[in-house]
Image 1 (cartoon, helix red, strand yellow):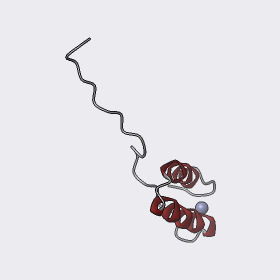
Image 2 (cartoon, rainbow, N blue to C red):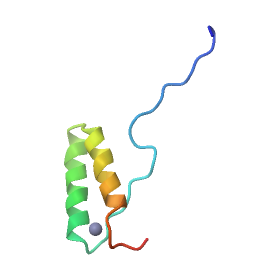
Image 3 (cartoon, protein in one colour):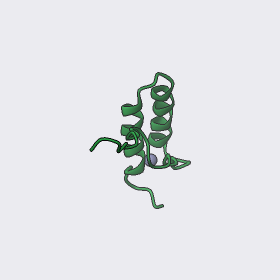
Length: 61
Ligand SMILES: [Zn+2]
């Protein structure tokens, strides 16, 4: 229908960034990788790493 504008869909990260477990080396490494990916603008990698962080087994929230 003309005259109807849909707002652009925002790709990227609708969810807040997950926090790494303080004493988990893997989480720390994932966060480090995420910073690198973010610095080079690789947002799909950032999202992947966030998913990994969020679903990293062995952590109670
Ligand atoms: Zn972890």
